[in-house]
Amino acid sequence: MIDISQELEPDELVAGLITASSGNAAIALALAANTIGVRKAIKVPVLAVVPCDTSDIKMHMLRQNGAEVIQHGDTICDAVLRAQEIAEQRGLLLVGASPSHDPYLIAGHGTAALEILQQHRAPLDAIFVPVGSARLLAGIAVYAARISPSTRIIGVQPRPRHTDTCYRTGNAGQSCLISNLFGKEIYTYSYKRSESNRNHNEKRFKKSQ
Image (spheres, rainbow, N blue to C red):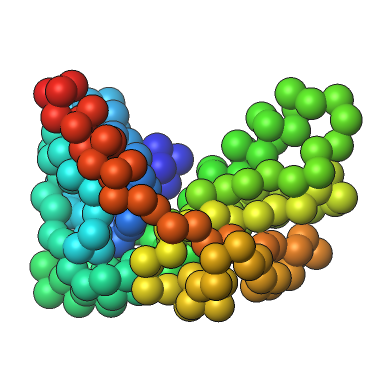
């Protein structure tokens, strides 16, 4: 995110940035905007459009880092469409116009695969990747395809996510080959997120405040 921000002109930064995210990428953009703002002695506004089921923890972190937050829709696709509308209305620069395919963000996320694979001498059988907007999944798949072609890449996401991949993997215990990215097979696997686990995480968050 900092690399992206550094490529922008000061007037673009001052006008404001907007992104659509399931939470994590927007937090990273807010942090990057703060960092670049300090370096260039300017204020870089950030607006994050997130799905309505975004957790309180992520919402808190976004606001804590100075981002304006708008919740919209049930899926990241809904958030992307709304972000595009707002960007045009307000004259904001949309970072990650198509979040799942933005090459800069995918490349940045992919370095996680480099770190994982460098820590293991023998090839890994598989890497399990949490899936939101799928940037991390795509980035890891690209790196792994070059460094460790035999390693399977498996994306994991909560079942009630209203996305096409979850729809196709909706049967508990079933995985599905969804695509072949740069020669790397990518699987998705859905799991049912328990209400007790969600409540436990929310309680931990409230105690930390």
